[in-house]
Length: 177
Image (cartoon, rainbow, N blue to C red; front, side):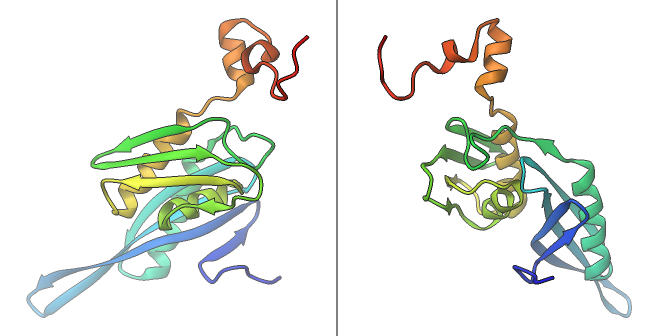
């Protein structure tokens, strides 16, 4: 099986993507003791995505822990035609703010580092995203997930309001009866 990216592994139904690894040092009597923190995003490329972080003395163990946590924190995101978002949305976490915009077919993923990993594992193919305020990968991913949780499909809105989907979205082609 060909691997599309060195940081990406196909694992049962989920694809996991390593976003960042941070090395931290604790100074002890004999010198420094190193530890590693990993941030991983997992998704099935069909609308489900999750993230997790793990810490350990060795990199592979930190990645394994992060992947397990990410699989426990999976959320379902409604997608339009399986390739983009239903509407524009903003998300916040800490000093980070992200703006996610739906895009036409063929646009591709226009997003920076950690957000790109989320969209690739989610299965979104057309989106424009902008991170404002922070470049910290943890805060960017948490803000992106905040935005994705605020996303609503027309079917969900129609059910909430007790209407039909056609009444919510109207006519897209502009034809009048």
